[in-house]
Image 1 (spheres, rainbow, N blue to C red):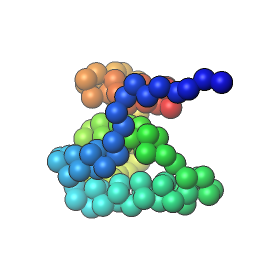
Image 2 (cartoon, rainbow, N blue to C red):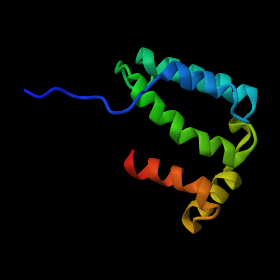
Image 3 (spheres, rainbow, N blue to C red):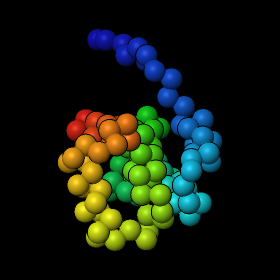
Length: 107
């Protein structure tokens, strides 16, 4: 039998505190907190509770997306999504897009 040795500090509480400093709309911050709460309760994945480490991966994936659009996520339309898709495929603004692509690929 093997013993798993953690090599990363994964602190969901600290990351949630840093969420307050994200430069996104307050409504999106509240929606994101609600989504993470639902993840931890198992409301999103058919009764499967999502760990803090996995929730951190969600936050890492969402942050560049929220910053890319610079407007409330609920107000996005098809044209916004098409522009986002084009930016990903053209690798525009690679500093912002690289984390998005990595998270999409590594899931």
